[in-house]
Image (tube, rainbow, N blue to C red; front, top):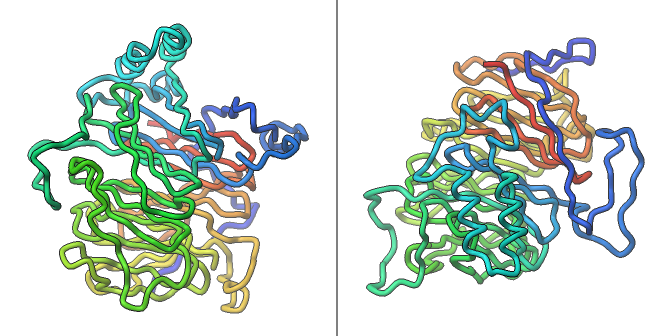
Length: 410
């Protein structure tokens, strides 16, 4: 079985990957400045708990918009062409350009805030206030001619002017769905009783959303059916631990759930049942992503590794190690300094962040597992990452309230 070899510090190789921009949250609730990023010592505001434990970020499917939050009530949405001009040629239009979307937001606001919103839109940025701490976000894009999964009522309140929405999961368990064409809330989804941990839309354009929460529940929502929560995924033996992340297969037929446990569950949506229980990790599973063709699944864990699974057979086909030599089972099963915090997969590349303070990128275009093509030192408090759709660029969200953007040369 192939296994990648880690790098020593002397072997560090950026592989052409370089940081192209860093920005920090202007949220007044947040007061910490990361010493790793700015060589300054900061502090958390007295009595403030927001912005200390979460950072979530996402690119829109067409790559024209980027959204992020530090765990306060605000989600900031940027035009990628304004945020990262070097990447502007890669951002495509999906019915309307990012600039026109942002300008539309300003035009739909009341007169009292129109001036401020217009200025924000002209700068390629707008802030969405959600009323409570943000814990997860996900963009969704409507497709044409998509067959429906759930029942559709003849009368529908859900109506968006555009094809792009942003789902925002909150600490109290609510989910707000924003219409990106107007900057207004299109739906409020309520069922979870604890913080939302993960959100993802089906890639078939059906506007079906899956949500996971710390209350151990996983729900399926049909947005065109007025946000109908039409099913909860419940294994026969029930949840043992909270779910950390969910992932939807490219063909929309399967969902994977992972969390505080060593197992990844593969669900078949036609029957809403677990068809495979993937066991191979030695510690909690932190993330999951399908390959572009949906044949492989990648899962990250606190056990210092990422495992690649064959979905059809349920067998392990590769391991991406973050320590050399790989740790013993006892070490991997406990707290260690090479825990893999998260991962993302786009086309031919796999990226991971690890609490050893490094971003690693692997070429996954072939079945052979080789050394990372890039290994770059980042902030040790990195908590989330997101690949841009062009797979050239990576956003890293950090607990210190700032973002770092890295990019490969064309």
